[in-house]
Image (cartoon, rainbow over all chains, first blue to last red; front, side):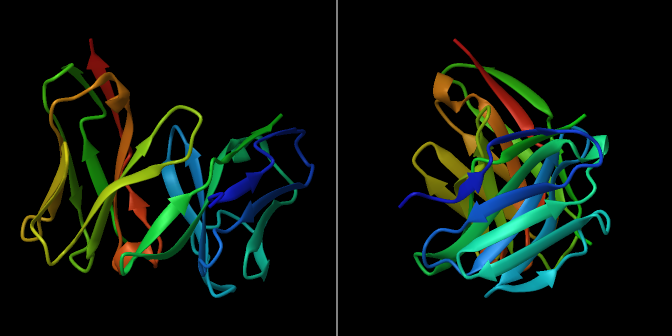
Length: 115
Length: 114
């Protein structure tokens, strides 16, 4: 299995530009989570989906952030317009059944730098 | 919401010695407690997890203990090796597997001295 796939791996953009991060779930998984990691705040949950439906977006910092799951295996996280304080590593994780337990598997992350 | 505290932030041990990382949580409804290992430039990788109906779980050199009354859980690594050097995160959630999203501690940078 290829695991969770994220693209791009690195993104450098200028303040005010739109940024789109992409995530492909592990085949057969039905839950998708977006996390953000910074030195100051650590790993924070932004939003998660179950069966393509957003369940909790209380961690999304502002209206500039939006996430979608257009199908069961793919998700996007969009920031528009981007700001320097959005610079972080963004991870997506998917979960499915491992030995009768749900387990979250993380992707390699997208390192975002907003200048 | 849930709050997870993790200590220490940095831990340096001699190769072959044991390492212990401790976490406390605030929400008594939490039932699932995973530990993740993160190497530089990579995503967190699950190394062990424990559910609230179990007090201890072991997998080779790694063990986790849970005290629900005191709301704390710990990671124990025995016979540490250089490849154990990484950042370790504890986490908590109400639903098994973190199906409601995980709340993470701030991480422990474990350094194994040769």
